[in-house]
Image (cartoon, rainbow, N blue to C red; front, side, top):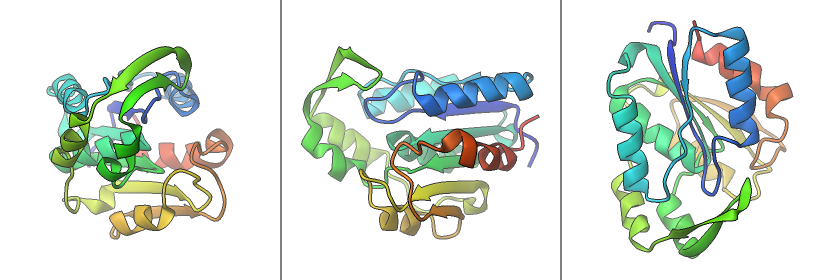
Length: 196
């Protein structure tokens, strides 16, 4: 594969491009890899609309030279993008069964980084999540999953089982947010992405 010239970052549920990991990556990419085209869109609550936005935004990106990073629900979306494009993917504590896990969140929600901002998570979004489920990745070797056994939100055994032929960095502790992302994991992510 070519070195990565275009990088997509997908945030998680109730999150945003203002998340700590997104901001850390944006700063590091801009500072060390200024030639890389970086895009971290604010995803709408509707999974169908989110994926429509993403696929429209990367329509003209070079498939062999693009990559995606996704955190939590963004990891589920990133898996869909990787399955559709064959690109490199880094998944940070990726959601594996969001249609099941988010069913209990139907209703009014607030944004994690802006509690004053509300959105409504609709029941029909569950079916939209189901429609985005993919089977095995066509190029599992192009995927790195960073999985924390200490994740308090998602089951690490499900995450590991979802990506059997991919590179897994399994953490004995950690947390869902990967609070030590910058000091412990960012270099591995950047090395795997092979940015220009």
